[in-house]
Length: 290
Image 1 (cartoon, rainbow, N blue to C red):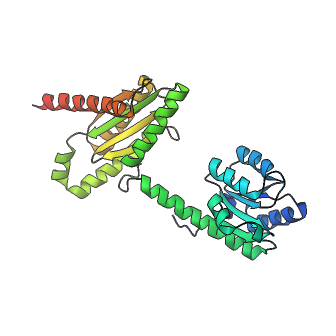
Image 2 (image 1 turned 180 degrees about the vertical axis):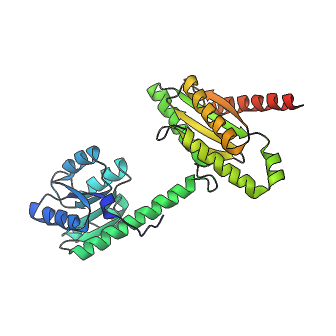
Image 3 (image 1 turned 45 degrees about the vertical axis):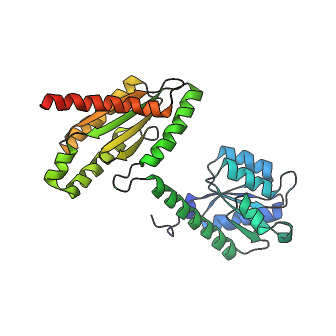
């Protein structure tokens, strides 16, 4: 990803100011730059609109009736952390820069301002956001397979267990281990082994339900799949698709262990259930080879 390659039409800006003669020219400036833009007349109006549409950017006045800009920024940071914010005011002494940034704003711009200054501020905020997003993505991604890493697996699984408990929805888990991967590595070399793991990562990504389930490199040649709102039947279908894909594309078999969440089940017990089944499957396969 090139963080400097910014397409303004991808951004959706909400401009908040209680004075029409200030708000409307700012909206027009942003539109001339190529941004998609909406406007709100005060903080409460802005919060209602943030609920309804996928804004990526908030440009808010600080001095407004009922809810001032500082309170709006704090609310947006808490409920919409993906939205970048720039505070604007003609009363800069009234608001401390540090307080505004600590509330969640990316930057501060003093009125009156021209289109060049506004564009520079917005562009810098977008670049900073993109850097932050890229670093965040790297911290949870396995660099070899492109799947999420083990650290993120436990974070996500904890969240999904909480959600399944609260919403009473089924939750499935698959742990997957490649059969005879050590022999493959010893025969073909570690580079070939890495290429095989990359293929498995691609297969997992393709065979799970997009935007619903999530795949992880659990460690070595082990993989994990968290299956949302999935009972035993759905989990087995997805598992079989992955297993078949590995056999067809990698000419190698895999062993799969399944677990299904039940009320009150601890995360450790949930993972251990899938792990024990995986161990038993591998044990049975090894006994057949003897």
